[in-house]
Structure formats: structure tokens, C-alpha cells
Amino acid sequence: MGLARYRAEISRQKQEAILKAALDAFLEFGYDRTTIDYVAQQAEVSTATLYKHFPSKADLFGGIMAQIWMTDEISAVPIKPDIAPRNALINIGREYAQLLNSPTIQPLFRLIIAEAPRFPELGTELYHRGKEPFLKRLNAYLEAQVTSGNLVITDIPIATRQFLGMINDIIFWPRFLIVDLKMNESEIENVIVNAVETFLARYAALLHE
Image (cartoon, rainbow, N blue to C red; front, side, top):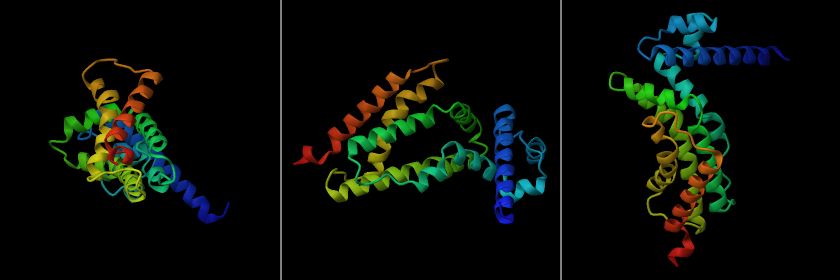
């Protein structure tokens, strides 16, 4: 391994340690009570090193959002436009459901809801570092399908949110109200398939001819 690659790997490892320590601290103490010094101590790095990776606590929270939402991976792999809408949407739905079922997503959303009135940057980081890249990726696929004539959509951003909303409204938000609510894999798959069928019933080009 060359010196540059070695240094890059060490930097990556330190960033991973920082993000893990920050996630644990945010979930245990909340956003306000978590300090940069504490996170650096738990990650076994200097405060200067932490600031090199994340210039502010908001950036640190955003890094957690990007990691959980797999922002880099999602942005780097566009949805191939030659995949049929039904297959593509089912795959997207499964991907989205998997993200929503991540064990850290729900407690982080509770944290954001509780502390966003005092720290609006939490909602900003959630959107720009987490959800926005996912929305843009789906948006780009739908635009390609409209251009190719497979779908007829006049407002693609709304259609994007409609599709994802049909999934998170059933498998995510009810868990905030009903303690220990769980859905098995077949129930989640049923939600995804019905969301796809509903979406295509509204926007499939064949139904508009």
C-alpha cells in the first residue's frame, strides 16, 4: 500500500470512529448536550482531527445522516433508464423500506422532532445530506421514463414524493405511535407492490392512450 493510500485509509478509519461515537452520543444525550470534545474523546481522536473531518456539530450530524441514508452509494449509482418502471420501482421501494427499517433511523427522527425547534439545522442536514440525494435519484429515473414515453407525469417532484410517501406512511410513521409495532417481510413487500401498482395506475403511459 502506497503512502497516499495508507493515509487515506487512516483518515477513513478515523472518520468512521468519529461518526460511530457521535451517533452513540446523540442517541444517549441528545443533540444539545453532546459536545465535540466528548465525541473526540470517545472516538480516540483529537478535537482538531474531528474538526478537520466535520467543521461543526451540524456537519457531524449531517455526516451521520449521509452514512445511514447511504448518500454516497445512492448518488454514485443512478437507476438505469432501461429498467422497466415496475421492476425499477419495486427495487427502489425495497431499498427505501430497508433504509426506513434501519435500527437507528427511528431514534434519530425522534431526536430531530424533539430538538428541531431549537436546532433547525437538524432538519436541514436530514434533508440535504440524507433524503435529498434519494429523491433526486428517483426523480432522474422518472424524468427518463417520461422522456421515453413510458410514464406520463406532469409534476415529477410531486410524483416522487407520492411514491415514497405511500411506503413510509405505512411502514415507518405508525411506529412512532404504536409501541413495538413490527411488520414482517411479506407485509412490507405487500406495501411496496401495492405502492407500485397504485403509482403505475396513475402514471403509466398505456393508461393515458
